[in-house]
Image (cartoon, rainbow, N blue to C red; front, side, top):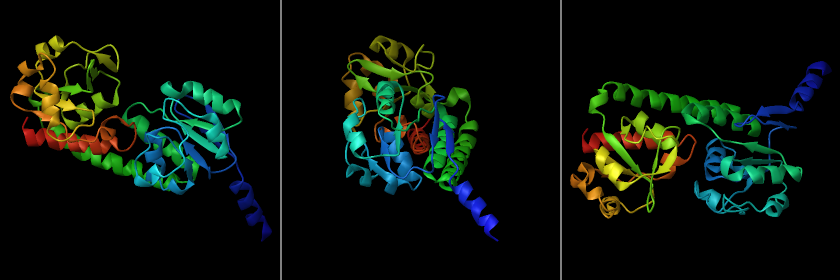
Length: 289
């Protein structure tokens, strides 16, 4: 009678071996109970999976959900205060890669476990959700969230498939005006535009993000401009029109500017991209294709 119990205890104590989004191996003694998140997108994932009570610290840019605002801050995303992280005694730090690579090394050099979440595309997002679910003991919640994502995306995909390629709006994604900054292939925003039923006019760029000349935007004459920075509703048209030359585009002339979608839903590489896709898909329909 004692044997099944003993086996259960051994299984419960089994280490969790993880391969993170950049191929690093992270071994935990069990589900993380004290977690520090160093990226807003990761904080959103942790709360969405029901692991919010396990998060003991995050960054000054972590503002969703509301509970994340009240947590101790360990930096501002680009800069992480290693000593503040250590003081919180986490058993896991959930970080990102390109802007935080050196901080990952610094944290690990102090003996901390660091899991890097750096998904590529929506398929990568689904895998990251499952990875964080395993790390935190919320595998069932992760599976449910992934299934919900796929179901919602399937609805949008079906509606987009019914529209011919030629009838889909040609979109200029406006991130900043000085410099005029936009997105190319490989960026989450490019995928959001495509999955929502639009065509990114700079889908042929050599990099996921780049500065472009206003003359290039005018030459490609977008049907619609998507403002991907936080502005008050209605201010996006003024913002675009103030860029020398953009007033000549049909998007500005016809006031076909989308500025009401929270930028976090467009750029944070997590499950909330589906919210952004749905919102942009609805915007396309409202403005007419």
